[in-house]
Structure formats: structure tokens, C-alpha cells
Image (cartoon, rainbow, N blue to C red; front, side, top):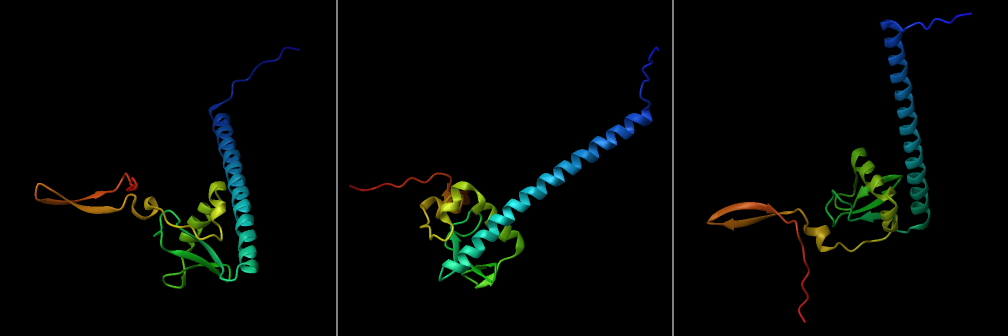
Length: 148
């Protein structure tokens, strides 16, 4: 018995490539679903814990991308902005939960954080006068000086 190795045709290569792409898509979709399940479990655990244990339902404050003075509370499993007393939109909610999901930020759940100078002013634009020309620059370095 002599085996003859058959070279794959162009059609065979096309279908094999399609199958590889489909498998990769399924793997990616499965991984994304797993991550979403873990995030949702985390979120639901803390929502029920805060709604049960916290008298004022405080969730967090000083979230990057939001004004540091804004505090967020829970009401009926929705995140409420304390300035407007209205629920925030889904994209903003997702951003807050992603911030809180990070291990280093979990200590801020349900705890009022005092805003630092960095939280308040970093990358904020201020007007600067250079050669009688007014322009705006972002604050990119903050140092706290203590007088003794």
C-alpha cells in the first residue's frame, strides 16, 4: 500500500480558513460572556450587600472620568448621581462598575473617599497669559508644598 499525499485545493484551504475564523469567533464570544458573567456576579453581590447593609445606599465617589465631587448612590439597583438625584445612563454605569471591579479600587465601595489635589485638578485646563496672549494649558503636575 502506497499512500499518496493529496495537496489541498484552493477550495479546501478557503473552507479550513473559514472554520478557523469561526472557531476563533466562538472562543472570543465565550471568553467575553464569561467576563460579563463574572462582572455581573460581582455587581449583583455588591448591589444586594449595599442595599441591605448601608442606610444611605452610598456606592462611591471620585470615579475617574467623573467630577470628583459627585457621589453615587444606589436606588432600586440603579446608580443615582447625587447632584441631579437621577439615574445615570447605562454607559456611565458600566464605567463605574468597571472601575470598582478592579482589585485596587474595591476598598472604595461604600466608603467616601476624600478627593486629592490630583483628583480635583489633574488635566484640568487653566488660562495662562504668555506674552499678552491668553491660552489654556492642562495641569499635568501637582505638588503639595507645606510651609513650616
